[in-house]
Length: 422
Image (cartoon, rainbow, N blue to C red; front, side, top):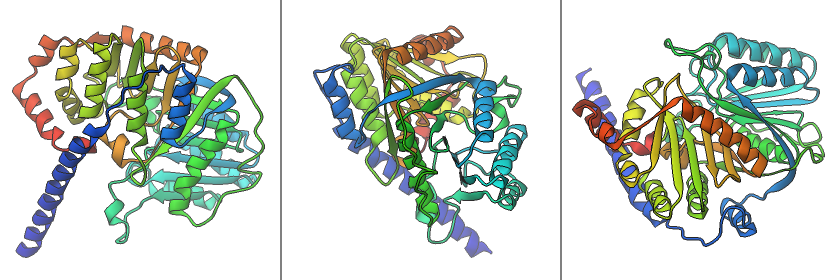
């Protein structure tokens, strides 16, 4: 028994050491991402460059509906699921047993029994709070449900690489993405907090085929069957006037999320707005934001305040604020409840929405999917949401930030050694 305990302790500290070394290496490597373009986000050269950098083309003729907070989001998703005629593909990081989850399970069961092809891909780690009886209920109804990267001896090297994507595609014609998981905290609150603040989006048009492809990418990693044909990729006609671009990011490919942020920030001419639940910027992103501020760009960032589900991550985040606050960048802490949103707006025209956080996990570790939108009207709508959230947020002063307790500073500094994991 003593030898076994020694082995466990040795493995733990070895893994911890390797994580620290990996994180240090990552911090050194990312310093190479220095961008100095001369064009702005409304210049056609920007969209062409972003297409090339992210290996994803823009598509015209899309319609995007903004859904604010749990009631509107879940109602729209469940209602469209109930109307499905051919296929439903759902991928989520968080799926927890509760009243919200039961709504989805009931709707998915009914559609599957009606002959609709239903596929559900849930991250094994993120959906750990989903009872086995719910998996069984879905399978008994004919739903193909898979736990993404459930540990096996041959998958242990990838156990840290999770799918953080939030994708729902119905009949290949309607897509949903954004910040919410399938859990009660977005509708009923948790730990005494009001329902979480979040935003999700309902999409129609040609871009939905790219969302379907993003789902298929991870489905094929977990299941041998290829999903193809009219049920999944029907002919899509224009539904609106929005120009958009779907891109995915994973540990297997380029650092697409980080590159999207850095290129967008480098092309900003007037204003940058970031709203992010787990804002843990790396040195490259901090440098880019500070340089933008020095160019005269107004930079505003909204993060969760005291009401957060990740207090440790909050302290790791706050450690990184020194250069941002010293430069005069405005950081606001949202006060009413947990703010789980993920919104990035540049120059009243360019918006990125989806699952990605502004941190090391989204940049290099987890699978993410975002939609980049180049549309002034859509940007105006998102700016209105950002400014509404800012009115319920408290501006962080540099002097106040310096007065954090020694304990909180120590927690944050220790966490920075592993910041690539947050």
